[in-house]
Image: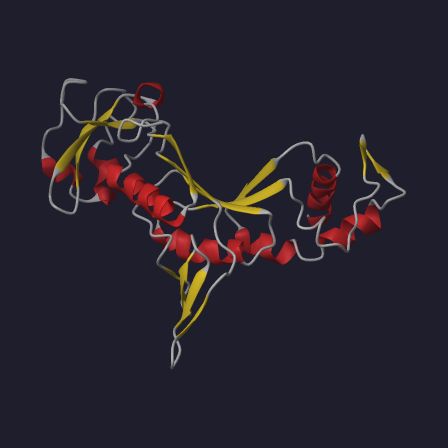
Length: 257
């Protein structure tokens, strides 16, 4: 309930020595919830009140300096382009000191600098919006993303992440000057030299379609080191992906942390 979340935000408001990262798959609820939050907290736990161990004295509910809370970062999860197009516009429309995307697990290619919410095209990294109108026009300086987290899937039923998906988001962020964090490969890692493990599936047909990856290894996906795939880039070059487990897969992208 909103009242329960109000209490959490009241604690965060009174603990500004900490930074809080709020991640949701329901940014539409955040967009509806956060406007008016300051007034609700002030009315319930105002300057003369004490909430738990946190004093809220001096937290103004009507000043731009205090709201949105500078120590609260708001993010949404994005696993593919459809999720990005559906969720990120809500995130951009929500007041937040820092907005971020967690593309983990990344299950498909994602363009953050060329999205479409059905009515306009959005460069979420630079805050530029192109409206599909006659004549078309562009709005610049709109809210944008401040941070992008990328990672592969882990766990018994994990699906591989194509290396080019992670590289593309890295390059998009670098071009726009947005922070990029490659968190992990997940269960699978690229095997550039073919010497990491003994390969048991060398048929490229198993990995032509991403949607086939899980079913192609359905009988062996619980066993580390028993499943490998080929991933292809736009030029047809193949990269072998080997299931080695999350710890062994690590978090180096093209040799860099």
